[in-house]
Image (cartoon, rainbow, N blue to C red):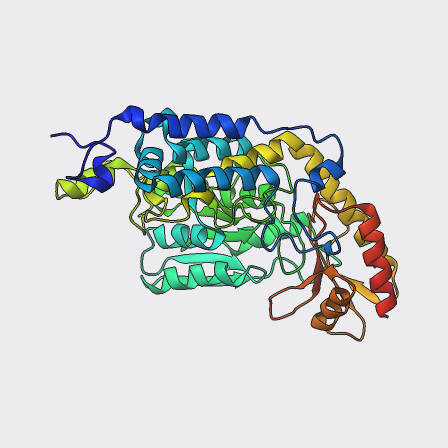
Length: 442
């Protein structure tokens, strides 16, 4: 007897007619699509958030405040799940393609990043995405992963744990020696020279949360492609990108960056539901990888299990979306965040974030009491600005600013800096307020 999607989790239990589920998925999407989309000015965007109005919020990259369309979508799904958990979730997860909400989520993400929905795995955050990628690589003893000294703890730990399981090695290189002399050519050349015969992956971060530096991913991709020209397919070097602080800030067409795999949470600059993210990778990457966590979102592994053999078809993205029960109301509401960005306009968002952070960097660079680390070159920076105030520790700077209801942060690295990040909820007037406060610190 052939298996069905409903059999996936409910083998042997009652079967409900497909029509009982279809209205849930279809009606939900139509309701979300009906949200107003008139963002004629930035104040109208700010009004979509329930942020405390008596604070200047310059750390929203840490975790999103949900805008109104996202709050409404979450609440809509929550009510449906609370009213009838089985019908709501079973129907959403296992209906045919057009009514399947995880596939709707993948289509929404693909419409934003320019990719194919079938090349997207859904995750809970960047950490999970990076772990799935590195642990999924078919590494052999003696293989190497090359990364940089600038990446986050979770990036390095994902690599360390993955290589430690199979006898592979990993190596870190600096991409530049000084924040005052960063060159795209030098970055690409350092990667090119560092790739060795045993290198199987290069892991980099699009926007460094340590400094605000934005890497020239396309140039790095050229260096990786050069290394691959004389290699067999099994020895091909993959370019893996932690993209969380570029997604929602820069041009969203990440498939044009030239990388092979891209992991990001969508609950930071995208203002997506908290606890959501994705991995995009080229089809050949998924096919060569090994899933790490059982998935609910592809029938092939389940059918193979039921028939007591390993899956026969090449792996694909859906096999890597972690299964298990989770906060489905957040997971299902992610398309609302994508539409929120699309309704405002990605190009407008990029221009606005750069405008505000440019204002901030220019003023900080002029101050005698500050040291700016983030490049003023907008091709090498994005939405974060890192700096020091002379004679003060970063923690002291953040505390003094918070005393004035300015929310800043410190960079969680061995060398820590004070950090500010202007987003679409901020204004030039708020930047002026922050500049005055920092000037007074010295």
